[in-house]
Image 1: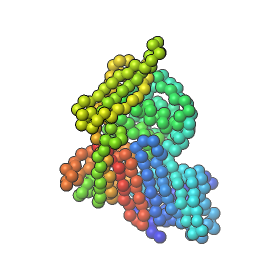
Image 2: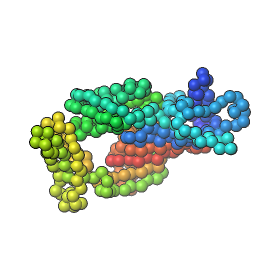
Image 3: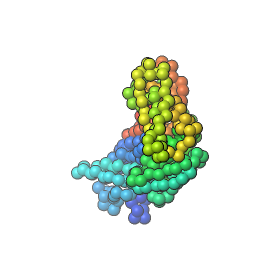
Image 4: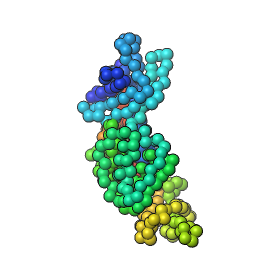
Length: 326
């Protein structure tokens, strides 16, 4: 069994010893999503008898670290182990965002999304790396009985709708990180003459496309909801009416409501285009990265946001599958 070139896989089973098990791993997949999920590792490990007699073992909670060319790109914790009589183990490993799936409550006033990230990370004892200041102060923020990760994304969504600024939350090899989307541009070109060897494109208005935005704010004095509507008559005539209804914070003023409504219409009033690319692997690319894609026969030469990314390592080869959004 050959080891992956320039790759090092170690396990810390918390008994004081670090084990290099690179040559025991015939294949693994590293998956990341831009929002809502922890990074994960699906790994196959084959234990020769000599290793079993040496005292080496893997258990839930053990730490897996992977590095390439001397640089860490994954650090996570074993959550499940499936074994067989052929000395083959299949591990499911998550980065520390997995711990943000804990359910709890959080309340604050005039709080930035970046502070929501820091507060929830500290509550879980997670390691925090670079956190970009999101600047916008949310007047009133409160969630009860919700996943910490959902709370964070709600705060990031409110920042996007109010200021038009998008951020990416991810685990950077063991450190929770938040960066402005403008900081996520990868120094890589993917195309028919560079890395890519297959692609597919789809266009749809079936989900996440809306040409009428209806915002509702509770008027406690009058005991009713006040509605604010923003729509595009042109696309309504073309596609039919596709409405998004959303309740909003009663602390928002008229200018903030208008800015939110116009921002939502700007974001949602468009065809959703999905672009899947199969390419030679590059671990600098992950979900949340912004990559330049150039495919001459489709007339494509622009930057895309990576929504989903899967790196596949097997037999010394490294490929990746990307789900992109323009």
